[in-house]
Image (spheres, rainbow, N blue to C red):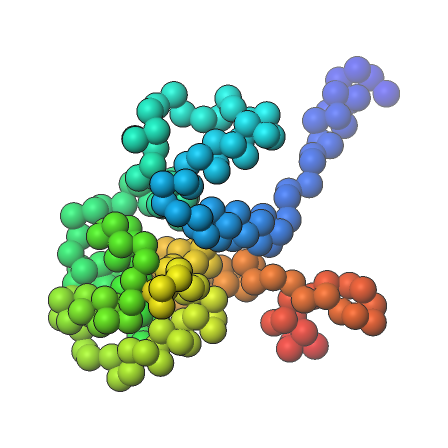
Length: 209
């Protein structure tokens, strides 16, 4: 084999792509863990973790007061910081085109989190924002919040309040493409372990068998 052929073979040896489902699952756990501590401690936790892992070089060379507001949008990735923050609640919902109450309540939660700086909210806060956005009255706001929580789009924030989960972030970002939104949930959903075979499987995969 010539030197050029050997080089060609070497170049074709590609490292397999990471398991996206595993990455999303890990991402969801990290964000949930960070959000479980008080806001003023979140940056300290992140910096401590990066130091422990030896990744201090990835920290931006900016002061902590600048970084703290960005941490509240950690679960949505860098794309969030390029979003148009001048959108009204009405315009935002027109873009996302929610059809069900579950979709609408999750979009309202996203708007409160990223456009109003309200990461923790109650059902009444979502209902008021729904009215402000000139939307049709929710048939049962409390039930919609409960369904969003059962689906994993919202999670407890303490004090009877809720917050948007990492899965909820991905879900809203994917809208109005509902197929992409469903796939975001499917990929981020923890995989269930089969007790007999010891093989992990996604709950949706199990239903399709």
